[in-house]
Image (spheres, rainbow, N blue to C red):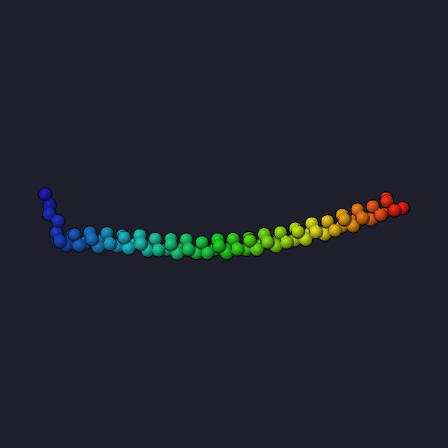
Length: 84
């Protein structure tokens, strides 16, 4: 049976520590990337909300104009039908 020396244990400890440091560095990078993606998604959501609001405003405006035109046309037709 072989015995493990203090030097070998230190080398093993250093190796394990270096591996954990690399893993922690990668985790930190991943966390930063996730935070960046979250902020990008929030920005996109705000822009989509703005576009949706504008689209709703335009749609209501178009339907308002169509309603006025239909009402005017019906009034015009009714005037000649009921009061020739």
